[in-house]
Image (cartoon, rainbow, N blue to C red):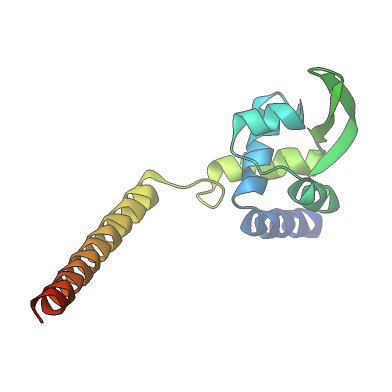
Length: 143
């Protein structure tokens, strides 16, 4: 049986996983991909992570990432370097095991089906509007 500390830690990790989706999960996976430390330009190349610091600050506040410095890139530019904390490594490992952190193939297929249905409905509405406009034009030009 686990200790109270282990139980509290697993509850904390589960809570963080539930809060970590989209860009933040991509950031965590990206840092893990680069061996536990990466700069922002690498991470933006790894995934479609939006510019700005909001998601990075959020992960820092959750003690998943920590800023370790700046790295010179390109023509005089700098990028902030981040590394996973011990908690961050645990969250990253748990995200890899959890469907919360990544979209599954089934979820993508469901999204595609929903989008195909929505496109079909929009095409039908477009055709109905087009037919209505054509009718109006005919009425205007025959009067």
